[in-house]
Image (cartoon, rainbow, N blue to C red; front, side, top):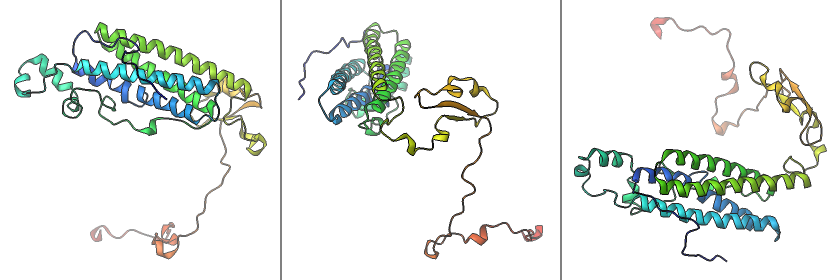
Amino acid sequence: MFFHKKELQYHSKPDRPDPLFAKQLQEVLGGQFGEISVALQYLFQGWNVRGNGKYKDLLMDTGTEELAHIEMLTTMIARLLDGAPVGDLEKAAQDPVIGAILGGMNPQHAIVSGLGAMPADSVGNRWHAGYIAASGNLLADFRANLNAESQGRLQVVRLYEATSDRGVKDMLSWLIARDTMHQNQWIAAIKELEEKENVVVPSTFPRHLEKREVSHVLFNFSEGEKSATGRWASGPSIDGEGVFQYVQCPEAYGGKPKLKPAPPYIHDTPPQDLKRNDNFSPPPPHLM
C-alpha cells in the first residue's frame, strides 16, 4: 500500500523559467539512469524478494523515495516551462533571446504534455522497461543498483554544473546527496552479501561444473602487455578459488566450425558454390 503526501520531499522551485533546461532535466527523469528507472528497478526487486527481511525493506524504502524524486523533477520541469512562448513563434523569434530558447526547447513540452514533464529522456526517447534490472538474485541486482546510482549521480552533477539557477542547483544538490547515500548503501549491502556468499554470481552454481582451467585466466586480445600489470593478472583470485594467470597469445580451443548444408526448401547457396575455384579465370574486360 502506498500513501501520497502533497508536500514535496525537498524544494523544487527555480529562480526563473528556462524551457531549454527543462529539456535537459528530462534526462535524469526519464533517461536510462533517471529516477523513473531506479524507482521501478528497486520496487520490482523488492516485490520479487521471497520473504520479508531487511533487504526487501531496503529496496522498498529506496524505491518509494525515488517516487518522491520523480515528483520533485516533474514539478521543477513544469515550473521551468512556465511562460514558455508557444503562441506566434514567428513573432517570438524576432527576439534573439526568445528565439534561442525556442530553438532548444522540446516542442513536445508544448504540443504533447501541455507544459509538463514527460516519461522521456532529454532527446524525446520514451522511457521503457528494458532499462531496469530485477533478476531475483540480490547480489547481481545490488551491483546493478550501484551502477545506476553512479551513472545517475554523474548526470545530475553535470546538470548542476550546467546551470546558474540557484533554485535548480539547490534541488540538484539534494538529489546529489541522496545519490551519495544510495551508492554507499548498495556498496554496504554488496559487501555484506559477498561475505555471506562469494563475489561471483551466482554463488550457488557448483564450481566443479565450470571449466576450472580457465576460471581465473586473463586472455590478452590487445596489442602490448599493459593489461598484464593489473591486480587481475596475477596473485590470488578475488573469489578465493584460484590464482590469476595471464596468457599473452590465447589459443583457439574450438577448431574451425563446419556446418551441415541447409535442406533444399531453405534455398541457401549450395556449399560447393561457396568453395574457392582455383581454375576460375575472369572473363576478358570487353565482356565484363
